[in-house]
Image (cartoon, rainbow, N blue to C red; front, top):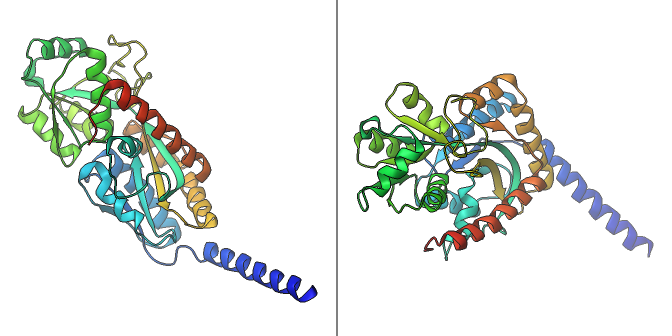
Length: 322
């Protein structure tokens, strides 16, 4: 009996030492943060703010790897096949939860193939149009839509992007049915708004704020129940005539399933430290984002909750799945 107890104790000690070594030795090479959206979009900007500070503190480079297309699915599939050692992560937004129900066949399981690291921030979208269409308020945009059936288009950064989800919620509430035109990146979408190829988009504040301040885009409303610190003069959608409308875009980090808890905890603690830095807070606030650090378990719960919420939304709004 004694020798079995000794063997079990040795095995446990080796496992504990190995886990401690993995945590203490992490990171031991560059970290890759996958991003399913283009450079300059809200998801990309948040990843780069976090990645640079992480690299400065840990002495290992942190590379943001933009793999655009399919509303973030291409990048997410890459992570699902990555080694679960903490050196491969992905920055995701609320569209990650939407895709779980929108697509009938995903190349990964949204809940089983990934493990939460931490939430990072949340932010509103801003509804923008090109100045040349002479629309100054959200109500005027609705009238513009209704007076031009089959002539109004809205842009997004792809199906399952936050821009698309936000627009479909708006379309349902407003009783309009504009045509959807997806682009690979939000900067592409905004370029086409300015060119007059599409009429409106729900953009991340970070992507649109400079164009709004340069009067190249007209901001009509923000999607959350509170105004954005980056655009304090822009009313909320509730203030603009849609009582109760509230859509927030969250961002967070995922790791492949099976990533050791000590490594996830170390990453979460590091991101929490970074989000507490005043210059990072200031940077995120100028982009319209509020820091929201969490534990890995808390972020897992947020994803699970929003997967269920998005499934209900798709059913209630009548969005046609693929």
